[in-house]
Length: 336
Image (cartoon, rainbow, N blue to C red):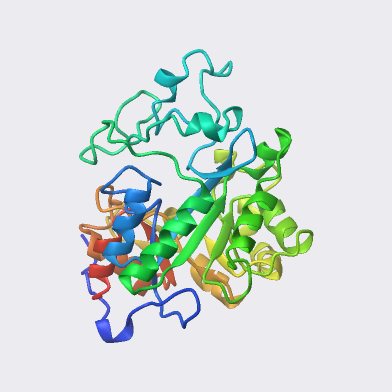
């Protein structure tokens, strides 16, 4: 049994304009760019997402050995680049090549490829082939300059959604990821409360530090994982989902980024989605809620198609937006 799929009328949505204008919700956030169509976090994937009309473009950020913020989902390079071929013998004891062990000049020698899993198999079958096309790893500053150029030539505006990836790991390596990222945002006038930028992290201690110690004035989003994922030392996601935890988040952050499974479940195993209270509870504390990640090629069992999944997320659960690998399909499902 499936819930019927209903799309929101386009009149309720309107065109979302970012970076200095009002925001109409729900937001369609391009997860690592239009990563369902092109290798993730490449400038090509970001350009496609802009062309499709995404409201926000996501950037995961890590640091190089020389402290430059680059746009890369993992702290390691193996899943999405040809690093093992270009730099044979540079892996750590676990067999992986860490971005922080390579200078920016070295990382510029790599080509970005479609993601593979730990077995070397395509992470998403049917997506872009794992072939070399000259795509490279951009720095955060290069991406911002690129997107500003696209805003000018396309005549539309859109927000940025950078993530501080594993800040505790970076500190253990002697580097301060948050300070480096904020410095880039400040250099481009994107660190203030009016900037259409959501800065996110799974690390609650870092979210508090960014707000309270570093004095960041822009919008912050606390991402929610599961404790079993070991995403951030000292962050208890089970507690953060409680009223006490949500109140603590609301003291320093503007939004919540839960996983889709924390918003919609099928615990009854009957093919019908059950809405958890998380979105409702978070909104009671004034938090915007943007679940991750809606994928047309990896639907949960309670959604027969992508439009139904969007409907369940936005209309049934009440989310203010969502991350998706296919921003064009997200916009279509919303009637935009």
